[in-house]
Image (cartoon, rainbow, N blue to C red; front, side, top):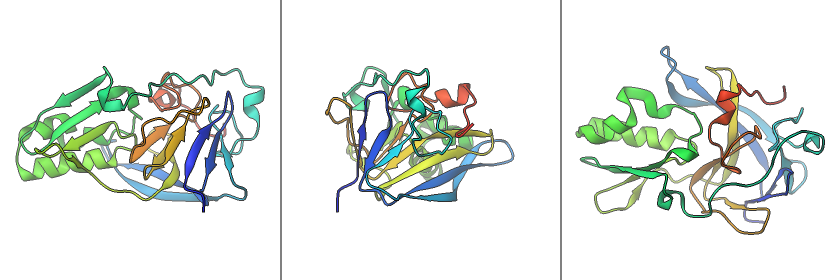
Length: 228
């Protein structure tokens, strides 16, 4: 069996290898509009391998490519750095009592789990078991891997996820989100170079990100909805 990985094609779709199906995860918000959990949505069966997944945002058969990129006015040029994301100039650190937190805002997917219970930055600095556990929970829920939590020995603390590709739907605001790539799935650029392998990351599927192939939250500002 082929180990799952994703190949980016020039001005074309993502080619996903070693994947049997694509799942849908729906962001669930509380009464205040704060994201709190995921609900399971559809399951899209993969008939042929590799499977072509849309990244221009124009397909009428999401999440699959239907060839719309050939006529669409869009720019598929990759702009993201190959430097590990927490070593980039845009990375920042927040020191805490129990955990230290690294983050890179250029990889924000606008999922908004970090806004719950007083916001993750405040929780990290507050101290106390409850605040530390909530901060870790919010970091785990972030699909993009924007946040990395470290214990005081410098070890990464977080969920270990099996390989899976999901689409994200943001029900509370009525928009579609990125592809959620979990379980250390390798993403290879169109030029053949691999990006940093991470436990979770989000790939742009609206075609508008300024940090391609990764999501930078541009789908939210454009109110993008898959298939429309």
